[in-house]
Length: 451
Image (cartoon, rainbow, N blue to C red; front, side):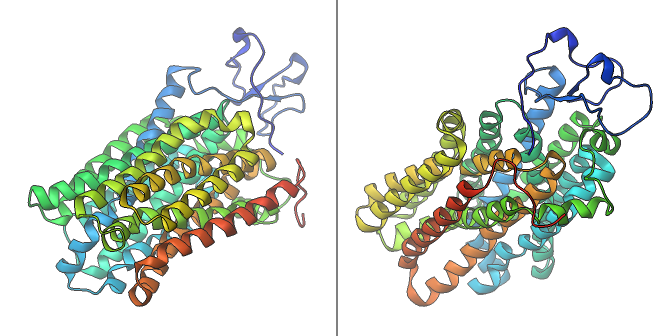
């Protein structure tokens, strides 16, 4: 189990001044002149604070910008898909491959994330992940043939998966991690809230082609590359290995991923986030169609309902991150799911546009802080050296759910109608609650299936 504690020592003893790995306090008898990547036995794990130095603030804000770029990309799909259908002359099922193709990238990121950390450190993440985004967005902005477009979205998924695993773990090990993670995911929400407005305005109001939006995305990803790489330039592979010594035994970087998969908490969090990601993206992707066809709203009003959902999600991430630690992360997530189920029932059973719009906004509010809460729970139940591998796996599952379930709902809706959205969402929420209930049965220090 990872020990996360607040430094109670005098400020003068931190940071260390004799070359020790960041994140450890040394007693005099623990200090040794011998070169060794393994922290001494008397080292005390210290949780860094987001504002402990200008450098740390720089790094934290860089991760916030990366989250903003991811949200700006993910929420724009709904706005550009109608244009993609017209431009490429493909039916909805084929066009929906842009939902599914990032899953390949997410899966690849789950496999490679720990390897990149071990070999290149967080510096490697800040180079590889934004570069994937810059390259993909630049190619998409040239409106390539449709097969190339699908491949580029795989590259987007790889970049986002690497970002998600790295920054959720890094922030999750900070002091006051729930609040800071709430802000990280909140900036994702800000990007997701404004991007449909921007994309729709460019396409409909300004008369630009759909691919014009990706000029802006290319610029935003380029800023992320420069901003994050410069902030984390000192976070090399050797520094990462010092701070996160490998599990004793043979295997190398990939062994960490294999070992992480022997812990129940990895699978519980992964499956839970797979369902959660599907719920979040399915609501965001299909709410406009539902409000237009079932609640008979006009396109603008229905678009405002989608904005309300993303805005609720964003507010929840900024605000409820301060509430969850006081309730307890495990219990608070269960409570938020129950509230979301109650609001979904209101959304489904009360056939009034205004009621539905308000209900879906509050669904977003209570769903908002669930992902950060799951990361906090996982980091506290798993050994520190497995955090990147386990959370990279779980984050990839979350993004996979966001790719699979919107596509599945679309396929069902073609034959059954978009009214299937609500019962499917309720079923997903109920199953996710059952999965999360399993976390309460885990010990505070879980033993893996095998060593």
